[in-house]
Length: 248
Length: 123
Image 1 (cartoon, rainbow over the protein chains, first blue to last red):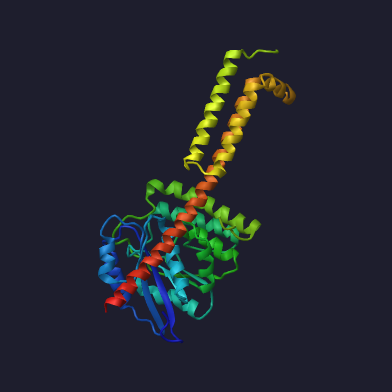
Image 2: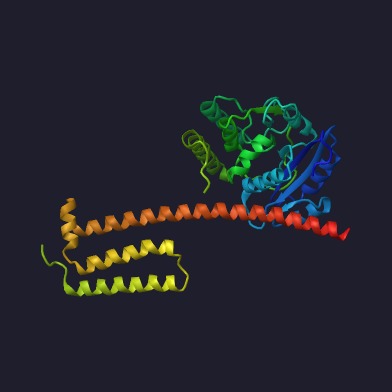
């Protein structure tokens, strides 16, 4: 996959579940992005969509992953991470398929990694409070996770549910080993930090979703909070007492 | 307290235990039950059989453990065994979940590779 030695290979993993409305446009948009010394490849991961997502993806690119069994967002993203590791990409980016994450802000996420300043970069919509700020319920949840992270890790992450993030090869090795299935983002922060990786947040302006349905509807938000809290606590104690997750 | 268990129920319980054992063995023989899961069921049937033949066993055991009402011991033991087995099943389930995930991911990556190779051949 490597073409030139000095160039940095970046894989953009796009988990898709019923994103027929937005995925084609998004893939074209990524093709149009030019960042000096960076080679971008998009990798849509179709997680058993029931609509025309597959056709829309094929219209734009021939490189994609098609999951036979629905794995949920975590499993879908992780298969992208495996792909990145297999093909020796330098940086893996996660970007949602619904068009919420602006492709134009990509270089902001990549720069700290390219300059070796940290291992994980998270795009946060709450640093400058610009763009789409999401519902008050969701904001409450994000605030809650911010406090929980601060309590457990002593670091401040303003947008721990943000799925717009870039990781380097060190972090890639970790997430290939273990990545949560459902709502993986807040848990992954614990995983990164407790394994000694440096996390940085950069401000990004997010848009309202272009299509599809969020994996977090208000009906399930309580379940979400409980599940993620448990996940965070479990992974915290697991790493604290067992060092690493024993392979099942 | 001796001989509170009438013969009728003893014969019934022996028949029941034997039928259960036969059922388990048939499942194993047909390959519908893996040996590792069958062990616990075989132990269960053996315990059932022992207590069907040894009629005072339950009372003796209950007295030994300080349980006043002997049948309560049966329920306690049974519920305990069921819970343990359910946890075991959850563990097995989680393991399989992880295995299916790995298989799906590997397959997706292989599929994309095969598709890519086919396209290269056609050019």
